Structure formats: C-alpha cells, structure tokens
Amino acid sequence: MIIGIPKETKSWEFRVAAIPNAVSELVRAGHTVLVEKDAGKGSGFFDEDYEKVGAKIVDTDTVYTAEMIYKVKEVLPHEYNRYHEGQILFTYIHSAAHPEQSVELMKNKIIGIAYEDVTDADGRLPLLAPMSEMAGKGGFMAACKYHETLNGGSGLMLSRVCGVETPHIVIFGCGGTGLGAAEYASAFGNKVTILDISRKAMERAKSLLPVNVEFLTASRENVLAQLKTADALINCVLWQKTRKDHMVYREDLKLMKRGAVVVDVACDDNGAIETCRSTTHDDPVYYEEGVLHYAVANIPSLYAHTSSILLSNATLPYALEIANKGIKGALKDNKYLRAGLSFWYGKATLKECCDVNGYEYTSPDTIISSF
Image 1 (cartoon, rainbow, N blue to C red):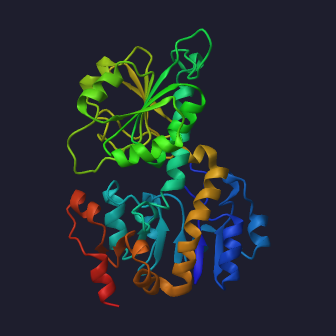
Image 2 (image 1 turned 45 degrees about the vertical axis):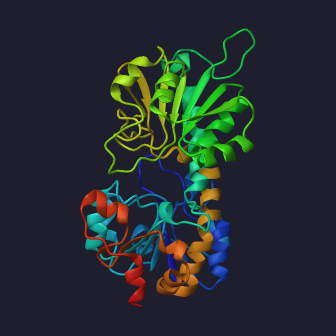
Image 3 (image 1 turned 90 degrees about the vertical axis):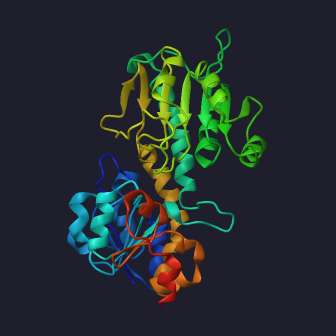
C-alpha cells in the first residue's frame, strides 16, 4: 500500500502522525511511504531521518495521491479537494463536531477511520488515551501559566509552599485526561479534588494517585461546593453533543473565587461547562463572568516531540493492519478498528455524528456484511 504522511496545516499544530521508527516498520513490511517535506520538522524529526528509513520525501500534491492518508488532525477546508473516492483517511476526525468537514468527506466518498473512536477489549479508547494524558498534564500547566502575574493572573503558585494556604485544584472526570491533570497537580502538593459519576473509575484512580487527592461523586451539590474553593477548575469530561444540560452553568461562575481559572481540556462548545468555546494557541483565553477560560483544542501540540512519539506508537499497529490486510480485511478482522469507521463511500457510519447532524446512519456491520 502507498501511505502518505502530510504536514499538518492547522494553526499551531506541530505533531506528525508517524515518526521515523514507525515509517521504518511500514517500509519493512513492504509498503511505500510518502512523507511531505518538513512534515516532522515541528516535532523534531527531519526529512533526512525519514529518508534513512526508506521514506520518499515529496511535495503536497504528491503526498495526497497515496492510498491511505495517515495524519494527526481533522481535515481543514483548504484540504477538502485533496481527497478522492476510495482513499483511506486515518486521523482524529471528530466528525460530530465538524459537520462541514463530514459533508465534504462524504461527497468525496472517502473511507474515514477516526482515532478517537477506535476501542479495545476493555471498552477503552487506545488511540485517544496517550493524547488524553498529554492534554491533562498540559491543562494543569496552563492553569499554572495563567495564574502567573505576568499573564494577568492572581500571582498564586499552584504548589504547596510553606507558610501559604495550599491551593485547591478541582478536576472533572478521572479518565486518562483527569488522571494526567491530577498526577501533576498532586505532585506539586496541591489539594486536589476529582469529581466523577463512576465509583469504579474513582476507585481505580484512587489506587494510582497520592493521598492529597480526594474523590467525590459529581452531584450538583458537590459541584457547586467545590466551585467556591477552587483556584483552578480543569474539565476533562467529554460531553455528548446531543446533551443540553451542563455540569457548570454560566451563573455558577459567580461562585468562584476572584482570580480562579477554568481550563476546559475537553473543549466541547457549550458542553460540560456552559461558557466553554474552543480556542487556539493564537488566542487561547477569554473571560466569562470575570473568570478566565482556557479551552485550547490541541494542547498536546505544545509538546510536539513527546506527543508525536506517543501517538505514532499507539496508531502504528492499526496502520500496519490496514496496510497489510487492506481496508476490507482489516475492518472485517478487527471489530475494535471497525468502531472507528466514520465514513464509507459517502455513507455516515458513526452513530454520534448522525444523531448530532441528522445524517442517515449506516452501521459498520452492514458495511462489513457486503464484503
């Protein structure tokens, strides 16, 4: 199979889908890998590194002639016309959140497999997990940054310091993102409170985190009580696009302390936090009800080298399976990969995307039965 690795064009996106080690594995398996010039430069991997392992360095037009496009982020409007019928797109698609992209990719009749929806035997999301950890840790670091006096913050160091009241960090969700945020926040000696609705998830997190982390059920009463004392609120709960309720409503922000910050790692517009709207590294913060909000959608790109290694390691086995077996064979043999199927020759095959955007839903199993 011919596999193309393009340079990401989203603003402030420096990651690359496949590092040279991954390309080496693909080449050794007999596949041709086209890497767009400077695709890995932003994450510390250079064209000569790819050439040494057998990749071909090509221009933008050539990389998109590949049978499979192996990338990091969703497709942007200026890229729509680069995709053609039957081409495989393997990336973070987020089809429910990007209806215009979904319509265009269906028009182009591509085969789309979304990293974020691939599952494993435990029901987890193995291709989302490594970036979730990075986003959670980066989210805590963003809270530290925007408490700095230099950045217009309160001047409070989010760390245990002798003679000063210990800061309080509140985290929604104790999945991979919440664990990442809590690991850093607790290591700095803060008082950390995690709220979740799953006792099983909280018990697992409790076994991994130190004693300065407490766990509470995410009831309305507990949420409001924690808002009153939080120096930083970090939201790590993905919110279904069809939900109309919130964990934190606009009026709830009035309960928060002067100088407190909200970091929404999930970045669901009007999601768990009603006042959230996605931002970029160009313009990362805004204020609502006097409270600073940070809601950058690609936090891992700030640490592009580490993130690219983690993402490449996670996605490579699936990329190899697709390349080795062909897309039909891979989808037929691997039901977990099949869960990530978003588009198939003009059909929408991801239930959430169809529910949110009103598309006709075609089950991936129906697609497979036609092979």
